[in-house]
Image (cartoon, rainbow, N blue to C red):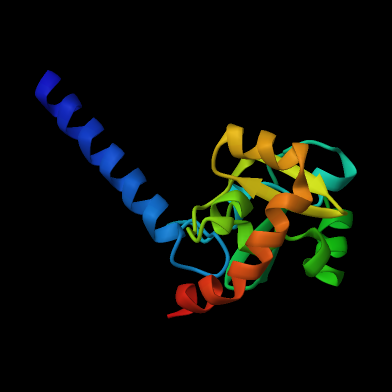
Length: 154
């Protein structure tokens, strides 16, 4: 029984690692198994509630090759009307890492709204550094994003 549990935990960890790597081969960070963008979190709630809140299966929209979930119909409608505003910038990739030339999927629990845009980060320390000086990181991330985005599309 213990050997089975050990083996199961190994394969679970392996599948999570593979899912994380697979998530960084798309223009928008999407869970390859569920198709959910940003882990099913409501992208509009970051603006309206100033919190990371899980969306509900009852309120979904499809766009950019992903399924987006929302807390209510109003958030869904706002996103559908303006995905460029409410969707995470850089497709949900960490802008600090983009500035270094690396595509690393952001975690929906590590976020900042700056300049009326949502940014997700792979690590807390990246979020904290970005929050202290967004313009410093956005300059480099914005410069590198077009070429990195083209690579992701291949």
